[in-house]
Image 1 (spheres, protein in one colour):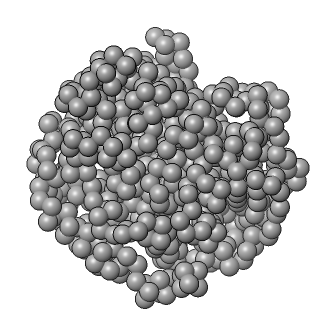
Image 2 (tube, rainbow, N blue to C red):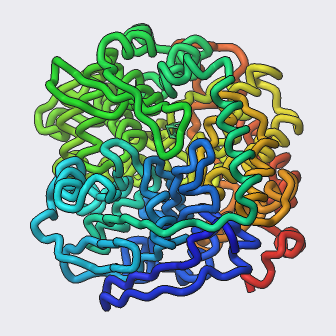
Length: 607
Ligand code: SF4
């Protein structure tokens, strides 16, 4: 089919066997690409009960039909696996230039299987595909290793690499690329680490066939024109995702001191204009992006350069830890990136540990004598290293807050901020029921990017528990992740407000298949149901209890920020889920029904 690389590459790291197969037509038709391919191969090929860090688990890396073409933001790559953090479905999206090279090498997916007996890296230059020794690189940071490969093979090679966090199997280890882009969430880096695969180095020169070249060019130009004419473009390009820091602080959504509050008294020091003025030196974007949100920064205080921090890192490594120095946040960002751990989960875990310390649950005996109070910058730097190396308290935090709090007990589970074992990203949801539901029901755990519903809460009433809010969350969950299926970026639609219908002729001209947004939303729903089924298959007793949010959001009033608009009863949380399951067509315990699966053409795959 047009728009695809045409091949699925399989690498068996146990046997060192390398093989290719044609991308199946039915998979392209029903799952389209990217996250859709990941969900399909995960469900079909990873056997029930597989250990996420065992030989049976696979890491599936997928591009989509948009990837590598001249469509705004066509540089997104999906990494899918069974998560070592949650035990369920993990899908992490990574920007940059990696996915374009996959397509130019003729690849739609790379499926990594088995476990190597020694450190290796995967070298791909078109059809030259080899596993090579990586012994000398094992233990080194992601930035050092990426620089090394760029020097050895040239700038045109793209690199995806793990750091010591992945090697040491930290549950939320990430995969790094382009000196600052990550497949961040769910521990995809630990799965690469256990396979002893240090890096993938890739370059391709093949062309991608499109069904209708003239229309593709016109449709691509129309999309770029819409981006260039968007009134928000200058502000977005100046600040990137940090544009929301002040807004979150004002509306009470900025995670502060382990989400105990939604605004930070020193938050102004972290706002976008302060960051731009103090540390940003240039803008940086992914492949084909007309609206680069990456901010490359230099901290004079720490003598360091880093891509970031973006909003999530400011929220979790800044206000959530009581840290108000943007240079310290940038330095924490650099340490986490180089060591290869997710800044969101790490910041959340350190926030939980700081609260344990301030409550007297941890003492200096637990912290190697460190005064682990909120705001302690040096302790934060120290803990990031300890998590990556699994040393001392870092070994506990490396398991994620769900497992760590269950080990410690003493009521610490109440302020472990996660859903399904994934640490919540940077929106405090005391007073935002749609966003709370979005986190509760997100397909990977408490992540924001599937359904960013918080603006809707503010529009219609923060504490409303009504079917319309639930419908909005579901629509966003079906629609927004489709960009991860196409292999593109959603932010041109989200932030620049370009008309989503502009993508329709582009996708049709690329693939030759006519589809409407209604059709695409159906595909989104198919993937959503399949991944829900994966959770249920892999976790005995999976159901409503797995969708519950951190009690902090309905049992405690936020210590600062907006205090109105909070739901305070467990019944209201359950009411949200009742409405959600009903609208999804699931059972009252949140499980997809046979009828629903049949309507979505999933019966064959499930049986
Ligand atoms: Fe990448 Fe940001 Fe551009 Fe999206 S908006 S393609 S994430 S640089």
